[in-house]
Length: 263
Image (spheres, rainbow, N blue to C red):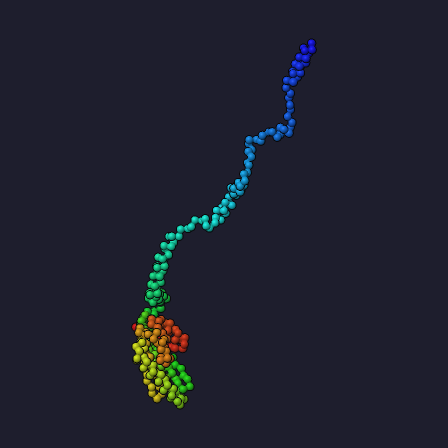
């Protein structure tokens, strides 16, 4: 009996143990164990990648970074083509300047002739121009007569005649003697040096005349500039091929009266 009862009891006990129990999970466990939706993947930022993501999101920064590449890293520009062109350009420039200076007188004459024809000014003839001026001091009445010979309005030679005449009230003729002496010194110096100038002198009781001739084609202006003392104040005021119109305007502004005789 006892054994049977014990066996029965044990079976009952074993049967009660083997019965499965249903355990209801708590809400907290369900929440924590629920996986995240596959439609929303999470991005895990690795160290050092945040800056890259920022640059990708902001393309403006990329352009700035490209432009701010250090100088030592930037590729060198190829200027070989430009360097080869410089010597050729300089040579051509020098040739042009030399030609311009060499032909400047011809260019000037051409422009002057063109402007004269365009403006209807007849200054292309050749001939001579006579200009005169008179004045008086206490003892001397003097007159300057200038003759300019020109070709197509360009000066070629000139003659200046200075007449010194004692005034009626003058009582001393020494002034005429002084001017004659100066003329003779000038004549001697010019006769000894062929520089494109000559001089002639004459004197009487009341009049002294100094005549100076200049051939501008032969005029040695450098020699004259180095020997001003021997010229006794006589110095050529004009140059070869100078515009006769310009000379005429300057003289008339100074009180001269000019007249042209053209051929």
